[in-house]
Image (cartoon, rainbow, N blue to C red; front, side):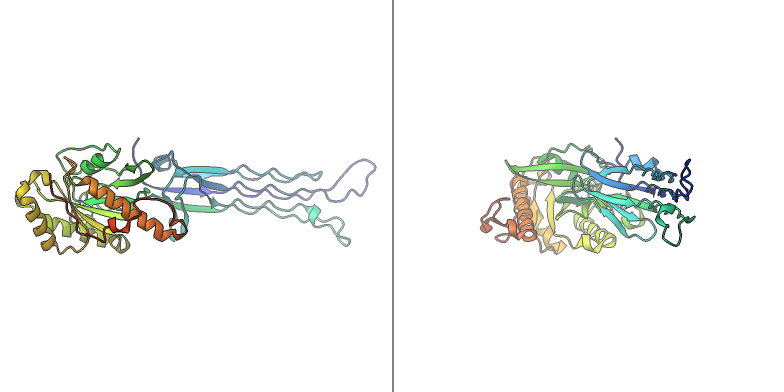
Length: 369
């Protein structure tokens, strides 16, 4: 199925039915009085998050979603029937905003979450509501209210704990294949990944996290170079970014430090909040470097790049260094969960010994192949 992560739709809730002015007319009942019923309500339009859907392709071509109108009232105290509601199913992670104002209508973050997109109009009142001691034959009635109409923008932001960031052919797809159940396309040319891929990393019997691989960035992405910034939205919900750098590029003239700085620059141009997320440096492709020179190459890169955060040196192809990285990620995510939900601090999400955390050695860099 084609991956579509953005769409625009129009939603039109149903109008309410009109009330009616009617009078009871039966044999031997000369003054029957008013008996006009109310109109029925118009149909609402709801959205529900469904974890079994992973694309917005259904809304790329089906742009208009319109609920039915309520029935008009009738005589003999007959009320109009209310219209059926419409429920749209969208992937978990969909952000729904007003097209013109940008106001958030709904943010679907959990399976089964329901939100109202457009409210149907109320039915009008029949003349039975206007009778009184001084107005025994009212001819007043009201029309139904118009249903709400909206133009909405849908953006799918995948839900993942960890996001992979880097240049094309930096080894992101190889890494997610090595550590998770994801099987993205891997080839020796740039932009092999054309849409986000999700993988579940199993750390233990009851411990896991989700990792997201997005198409690579290149310098000038803000101006539309390569695939631009169009997939960076999928990293906005992550709790940790892994900046994967090719430490042994094929081209002799390519400078890994310059490429890494370009990625950071593009990240800051796209979203300052995303650039401020916790980010670790992962130096990849150690299998292509002599083991004797690996540690020196890693140290030289870190010094030139001016990096002060956690550093990991790995080979995604041979899985060297991947296991310590996975364990460190699990400890970091567990700490994040405990900080967000202190009432669940007693729950076991991972190793409970803080001495095993990154605080001991935030620049851990296993280089053995």
